[in-house]
Amino acid sequence: MAYDSNNVFAKILRGEIPNSTVYEDDEVLAFHDLNPQAPVHVLVIPKGEYVSMDDFSKDAPPEVIARFFAAVGRIARELGLDEPGYRLLANCGAHGGQEVPHFHVHVFGGRPLGRMIARERA
Ligand code: AMP
Image (cartoon, rainbow, N blue to C red; front, side, top):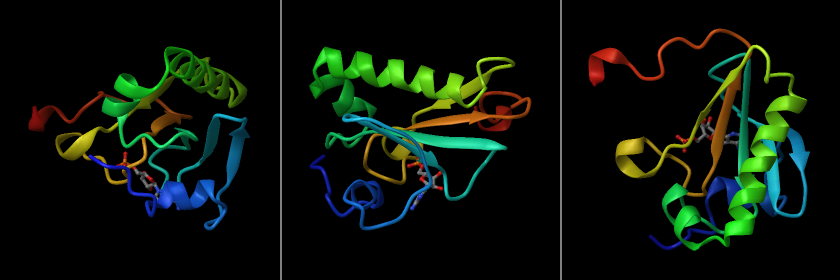
């Protein structure tokens, strides 16, 4: 799938849409989700143009992937989530329920989060 540079996170990266930034470096931006599903709900995105986990894992240089996931862990710690814990989620494609076609990892925390996926839909 070709990268759509009009997606909402591309607009955030270009500064065309405001965001509530939690963390930023040359390669990564983290910001609060507009529609939080937990007391803490932060999105972490690479600045590179990757549609999903599929092409990020396939096409991004290994060092970029490593730095990205190190940043996700650091951001969670800086948010105070390492104890008592948190959840990561990366929706990929149609069955994954991905709405925004720029790879992102959700970081949820701030309360016990229950089961990882709805049991009745398994
Ligand atoms: P996904 O279904 O994994 O693609 O999740 C997309 C997420 O982006 C949803 O949780 C939305 O609430 C969030 N979202 C959409 N637009 C914005 C925005 N402008 N700022 C922050 N979060 C957003």
